[in-house]
Length: 308
View: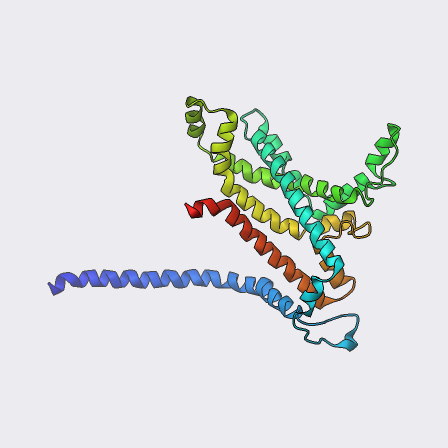
């Protein structure tokens, strides 16, 4: 009896030893990556959080860096300029994402059709997303410049008076148009992958049951695409809330503060007014709002499944 159990114990010990070796090897591969992430991500976050509790003006070194507790955060929610930036940022994110989702779904549906040459259009629709943000801002500025813009040039040829596209009334819709034009392809790409993953048998069975196109859309396509939409919305919300380069190049936050989103306000406080502590506090407010909105997405889109 003893001799028969000995090989089993040896095999068990050998398996355990191999498992420990695999675990150590896995950590050996992970630790360099975790170290790099800690250096370039976690450490700067900790430094900025610490900075947000100090009053630190680079232009006034004589004032030192006094510890002010939550004074920067309290100031942010009593600052009319910050409240204005929060409001227009909310409108910018909601309107931009709504149009990107709608146009992205339409584009994905069209690109999912099995038509000759559709591959060319699948490549072309990705071009706006692949352009650098600064290039997009410059391109739209050249198009809609009030004096030398291409759009006003063609309007003058048609005898139509030139428009002040970057005025107080049109600047905000203009930055939304630029954002939607550049980022709709992201939704189209993600939703196209989701559409192509839906089994054709579901649609064939629904046609046998007499389902209409709208019933297929409501009861098959949209429910299956819900997790895909969640992923796309989470990523796009995070990126849209901190968008900076195209708007800074296009309008600079103006005219006045008509397009001065919170991301631009943070830049101005940190690198125009050199108020580093206040800028750090605004950055953390933006981060916290992003986390809250992301959590809200998950609860709204998956709340029914969790209750079930």
